[in-house]
Amino acid sequence: MERQRSFSLKPTRFLVLSFSLCLTLIFFSFFSIWVLTVTPIPQEQTHYFLYNKSLLHFALKPSRAQTLTRFATNLSEIGAEDKILFKTHVRETANSSGFPRIAVPKRLHRWDESVTGLSSNFSEFGANDSILIQTHVKKSKISFGFTRISAPEGFHSDLKVRQENATLSSPEKHGVSSNVKIEGKSVRSCDVTKGKWVFDESYPLYTNGSCPFIDEGFNCESNGRLDKDYLKWRWEPQDCSIPRFNATKMLDLIQGKRLVFVGDSMNRNQWESMLCLLMGAIKDPRNVYETRGRKITKEKGNYCFRFVDYKCTIEFYVSHFLVHESKARIGKKRVQTLRIDTVDRSSSRWRGADILVFNTAHWWSHHKTKAGINYYQEGDQVHPHLDVSTAFRRALMTWASWVDKNINPKKTKVFFRSSAPSHFRGGQWNTGGHCREANQPLNETLGGDYNDKNVIVEDVIRQLKTPVTILNITRLSEYRIDGHPSIYGKKPRKGSSSGIQDCSHWCLPGVPDIWNEILYFHLQSEMKHSFTW
Image (cartoon, rainbow, N blue to C red; front, side, top):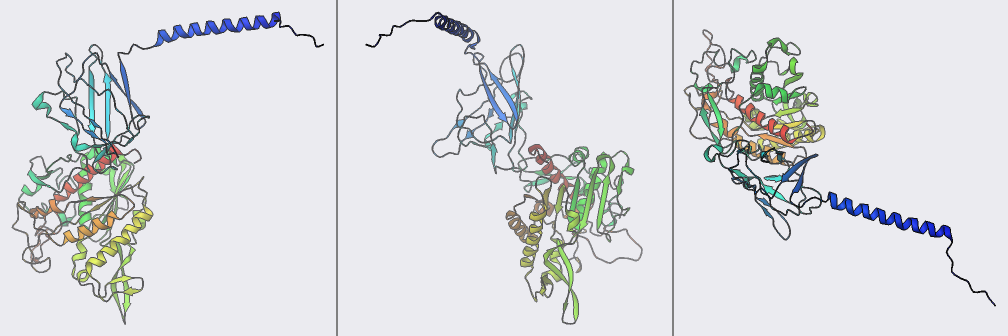
């Protein structure tokens, strides 16, 4: 018969079990006390907003009714099913510090987009916990009319913020603290083409005496022009403002970089203007020189000026068409042709630039290019006849292909300046055209065939993979019939009067200075939004 087993507990096992139970009880006792001690009183809420890689702390105390009026921001979600309307109001409060207070909705959810154009710095102050806010509202360069917003993890929907919904009433009018500010419209929402010329006694930004780089053709004062009003106009956009050119800040922007202008004599006009504007920040003119010792003239087309103090260069390369001017045999004759399928040979010097400003238009209006007879060449074929608009488009496509193949957008900013208008009356440059009598801007624009070229430029650039910014200076320049050299394009000489007036180029100082202010505006905006350049 099997022996019945009895249940017995050995002393060692009993001790281990007792010790384990004691330790468990002690652990839970201490844990309970710790939880009760460190649990925060639910009076304060802290919200964190992630901006790029910086954590912005937004600390609010609901017990202190903090409100904001006059700063209204509507955040409208473009979603599949529902919309979220988030309004923030900024109001002047009666607290002793004079700073505005903030009230935020309790629940914000369904966020997903990253913030690139909106940044807010919130700093908590002492005694009254007033909050000083400096808010900058700008449009992201990616978002076409929307400011992109970045929120913490856990929010799961797309939120796009229309910049135009962010408004702030005038501080002077309502007494709102000047520490609460919203910057003006960003470069992408500022239409510089609409506006007016304003007479400003503080202009010009330099004189022909202070700038040694104005060549004879643009130096109207030295060539005998006596009226001075044409020097004192600045362009004022209708719905926004562009900053006055600051030579020191511009040099800081391009420190260690290459700023390169490529195009015809109109771009040389702008390039010389840029040299003159930048000289305003140079204490010792000897620290600015042409790297090959060349003096600026109409004959030599390529220049490179080094600014020693800032380790940067301002360069110009002549290329009337941006494509290769060549020769080909037609029958027994060798004739000049334009290779609209081959980029200009100087393109090797464009590579590696940090800022590129292109243009072409003026030479496409000459008789040979407009006629298009045995002139345009593709491969070995010289077209017996090709329409100038078709040739212009094909040439720009060749240039665009070069840009996409050779430009690294992370290193190089590319601009294309639109056509600069001419103002010949009574004929063209070689048929008695004139503009001598003009000494004031026009009240209205006249329009011209260069607008057709601008349409083609916009269409080609739209197809590019590489970002290219159009500097649209056509319309604002159309008003300035008074800004051309006219008969003051060269020094007066006894017995030499050709009768030819220059109503295409521009006096310096003059209209090209405004083109460069617009370029400066774009570069400033790019720097504020870019972390790679």
